[in-house]
Image (cartoon, rainbow, N blue to C red):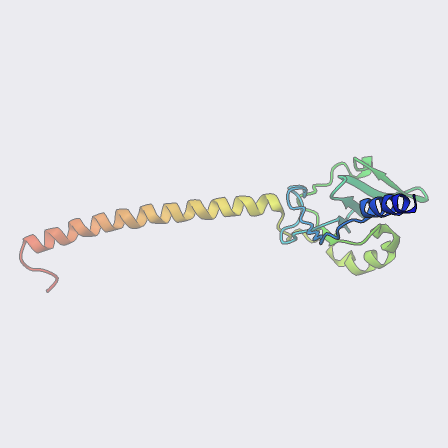
Length: 166
């Protein structure tokens, strides 16, 4: 009887043993970033906008701002910021947890960017790439047209026997 009990315990013990698995977690949220987000960041958890003193949660798509005497998180900006153009305002990428807890430091560090409109956003970077492709295509067409013109010109010079000499 003891052997059966020991066998049952060993069998149950084997059932609870798990094989260790290696896990690698790579976070890239490029697809989650809004088109008005800044270019050059593979991962962004929060954007801080010093011009309007607001944090934007990229993953949950919500704004966190100070209202009254507390921090409020909502899906839309407050009425006083409705006319802000998010494509123009400067965004600082923050990957802290609850960055508004360090708001005093962020406000001091990034206040100089409050009216800086030189930041390239994702939407404009995509357009810029398309424009560049079109420019290359136009240049190729011009180059090919110039080649045809030069061939005709050279053909005419060879026919009259003078060549390129004067």
